[in-house]
Length: 520
Image (tube, rainbow, N blue to C red; front, side):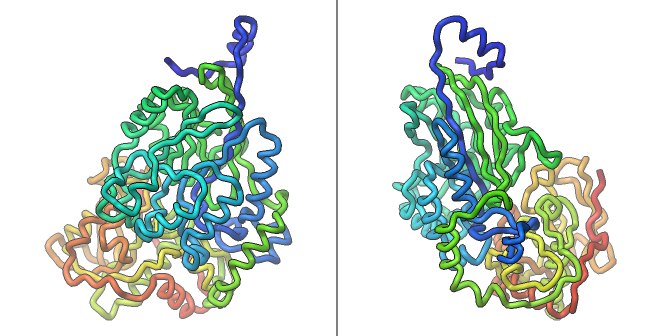
């Protein structure tokens, strides 16, 4: 059967012929929540209660609870799903791992979730505990978990749930390079998303299911590729790229929904700032006849649910002493926006790289590389708390020092700029060096004019580098560092290093200084 989005005129024409049963389903969706249980600022970092009461904050579980309940009330049939990456991002995750996320998602009535790469940050053990605490299915089609005993019986590739007397097929996706992005261990094998989705669609279709939704933590670009390369998918609920889709905002990356090959693709940015709300109407053959909606911004106009707010406040009590400690002062906002730090030099990237290099410069280290994907928020002007620093750098990464050749440094930079168009987290923020990259060149041949300490890099010379232990051990595609010489991965926590460097500067004025040049 060829799936086709019927126009309004086509729907009217059909209504004059044989009577057709319509099924309306409102898909409520979140993605990339990253433990933002409390309200956030416009910079996606912490937002104090005074600012919250003044209407300056967004999101938080208490607003999300209200928004979900209100949306359910106005829907004929509803489905609540998550596009992955509930884990990691604030002290809540450090303290509770996945337990608080499971509690909140159960309370809000989620129907299903796909596995995000950050669900593997602490290995299969923590993911298994999270799955055991949830009362809804966790899905992942493009991974073979049969060799991992902790997960073999806990993760399904797809499932069928019933809504309003209709059977809905749900399929999960996670990034194919999760083994580079997180710590799934050696027993989980990730595969191409297109073939994995089609295989599950075929199974569901054979079982008589004709309404199929993919929960995809794979990014906006991959979602479009999956839509183009498969048949039988109706809707893709996305995540991973933190993409904001909208029909009313000029800041949106595309329309909501984005339609590719008659597949409705949606995503709702990140950090609980929005609740996606897509109303889809199917005919009795399972063909989408209309799809419309808009992400709901969880701002001051969405009331906070009192019970949820009290529960989050209770959970926050053990975190307060660490979080409220003022460690530095910022003379201006320090920009750490995702789309900037994964594409060019950004103030937060330069700060972190300089902090790393400053800490180990007396050890003969010349170069610092920080992956842009490890930078998770900005910091606003004024007093800087440890909680804010930990929101920027939540992964508990340690400093790693090692030696590699100049040729390996070039190889690392080429890897770092190879996915700029897709917002890849491997983008290299640097210190102690400068480089140029050409966006018009093919990946693998983009980097030029590399200077270390003001001198051209020498291919055969050995250089001392500092990075974080995730990158040094091959994360974000930096496999060339796994065999580095004299590697030591057990330095101080990167967040502590950055906080101490900030404190030593007095009121810190953010900067970029041309260490990375982009040719377009």
